[in-house]
Image 1 (cartoon, rainbow, N blue to C red):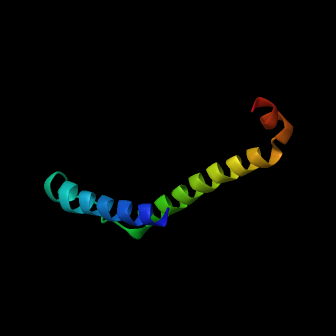
Image 2: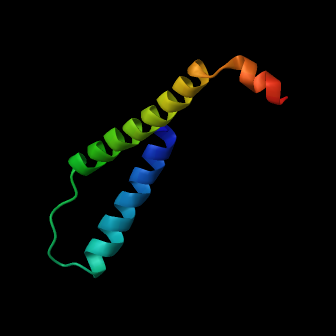
Image 3: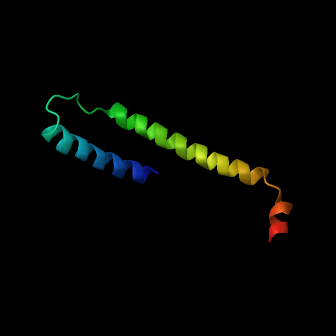
Amino acid sequence: MAVAFVVGSLLGYLLVDKLIFRFIYVYHPPVGVSAFAATLVLLAGACGATIGWKVYRAATANPAGSLRHD
């Protein structure tokens, strides 16, 4: 998750700052750290919710039911 965030943030910054803001939009607000911090919080929340839901389902599953199907 950390590697994906770092790579995505660097590529996103380069795309937005160097390409879009230089050639398409002349007047724009500066790119700040707050957008990247919000992205990190959303990414961590989504991963935590997904992993938590999978762990909850595995912990509450009936082992006899899964053995019966095999």
